Amino acid sequence: MVKGQQIKGLRVINFHDGKEVGRVGDLLIDVENGMLQGITIENRGIIKNIKYVKREHIVQVGRDAVLINGLSVVEDYDHHEQNKLSWQNKLGKNVFSREGTDIGTIQDMLFDLPEGRIIGIEMSGGIWTDLNQGRKMIPWQQVIPGTAENVMVEAEKDLWQ
Image 1: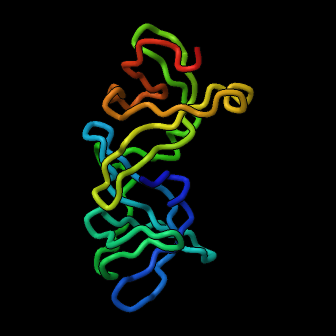
Image 2: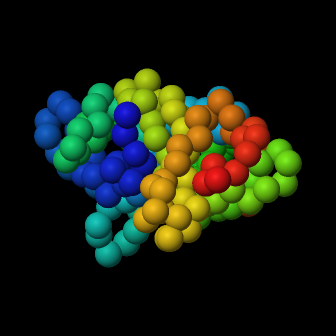
């Protein structure tokens, strides 16, 4: 199990020759299927150039780097691809239960790698609640798929009661 924040910023390295391609800029997720679709790669040059690698071309996600299966798998990033969302854009979003209760905000997502399955979302109830009770995790199966600014879940009660 790996958190998205552990992946963001890691060096992306070609497994075959050790060449560094850039750093992980974002994770792209498919909320309908609960899967990691791939990663964006940012270079550190003067001209920002964002690239994309599909999940199936990721060999390994380690503590210090993401290894990819060759330079030929690095694609130009298309901002308008369907069924993909930025993981970063979900952080800090409010989460509501089906009953309309605001149960907190998304702090991170947990992934099962290398399969790419989203295990769940890490929730915050606010700084004091986090300090007193810790953060909570909602299994991805309880998330109602959607692309709006708020996230809906099947949680039946307030997580921090």
